[in-house]
Length: 537
View (cartoon, rainbow, N blue to C red):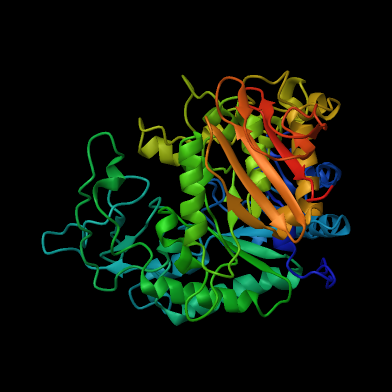
């Protein structure tokens, strides 16, 4: 069993380091079955260290029927054979810790697989001691579902169980029954799950679907969504007043945080949907909740200077005083940033991620500009797309295998990959970009190192500036140290008319380091980080 990393002088490592999300199915296959696994991931630890990664968020590797690719868990305290074994997990954790890389596990408290032992007991009889571990209800007088709640994956959120003559609730797939978090026995059992992995040495958790743990005990109908139209996915027909961000949920998150806080130097991330308006409540209430409620603004806003400036300002104003911001540039649930903003702006996106105040999170493959997988004419693997087709919800496009080289299988597998590798392999692969000092991968490596070493980026204040002709600008300041960041979002060259002098630390093209006296030009899609000269120099 792996031991935890020894205490460090600076305990808040999750503020100092970028977090690198790995979707294990798509990172590295070791046995030729076309599916990524723990043994494969272990062979890439040197790459993570070379890149400068000191924290990994690993999507689920627990036992699972894989109907939702690991987010339908049948055993919280074991590893699915498709990924390896518990011994291999311990070996991976030890290998990461030897390289000073922390490991954050994705955990799914909202629901289990219908094959989990808890649910098998719960559905066996109305009188089983675990019956109340899940959300069960009698039908309406007409025999239909108890209310109008909809599954996020389409259709009613209620599934009829003929054996016991009741419906059970599922916010996602019918094979993913929701746990009843109102039951203190459920909360105690899940606390033990967290302790199992914390004792094993993991460094924290990312809490999946954190806002939907608790449902209205009265099972009241959700009200109509006044903004709904036929262009929106059917699950958005109602406002989720009685199934989302309930006050009880916040208390349960506090309980989970308290369990994690039993172990020193750990972190809790949380998946939060619904925009910046409610981000503050996920940091703390009567007690602490998340260290880092995940913020998807950079993936959900328009990429023009005014929209980004406004979104950044709105988010930072929503972060409570004393709390720590976080920014995400990629995710297994979102389109790839390279396809979202285009190749002409993907370097700007990287620079923005690492120069804003707070913890940056990147998704494996974004550092080489991996584009969305074109699923045209292909049968979807994603259950979301299968059940709610035609609305652009297919998450397969962001989950294609990691491109290590330009060979067949992309260095990911010797077999047939579970998803196609996709287009652009010749340019978007690690081997090609690692040897190119001006590549996107080289830029990521440079920015990761800069953020970890420069106090103005690590803990400095953020001072926004007025946008100028589609140039987004701001300062980061720490004591006498001052950095000026300028990002040209226009499709043509821009002159930056600022009375600022200093030296360019890094440009998005990695080909400038000159001194600036006053005013300068930015090429299309170019950004710079400038170390401002102190007065008198």
